[in-house]
Amino acid sequence: MADDKNVITVNIVTPAGLVYDHKASIIIAEAVDGSLGIMANHEPIIAPLKISELRVKRVDNPNHENAIAVNGGFLEFSNNVVSIVADSAERARDIDLRRAEYARQKAEENIEKAVETKDKDTEQRARVALARAVNRINVSNHK
Image (cartoon, rainbow, N blue to C red):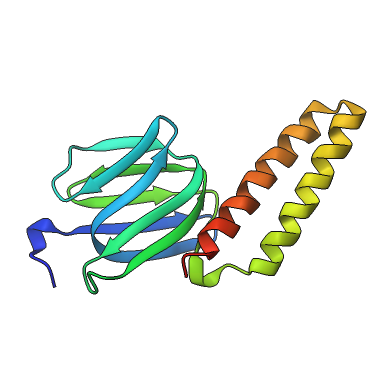
């Protein structure tokens, strides 16, 4: 295992509970303001996250990187611990690709209907659902 002073702990929590808990050398996240890479001893930070892929380079296998679909939330880093609180999160290996494709299709249909009826609220919700489905599909390709 890597030297403990060059290791960070990564925890991801959703309303359903703890989704991820591993040691890592680096994580790459997509904050609202842009990409964010965090390694050990990084300055403390709190950042809101976009619907995006989180990549974690684990220390137990340097050639292995976890891909996690994170759907919003925020990241906090201090004392070499990354804590992510997300609306939902799924590891690539746990994503049901068929279900994600179906969600993408339904979201696209809902966007089309909302545009036709000029229902801005429904359109906005459908666009968020589409972004989540596309994120899950993209992350599932990194199994």
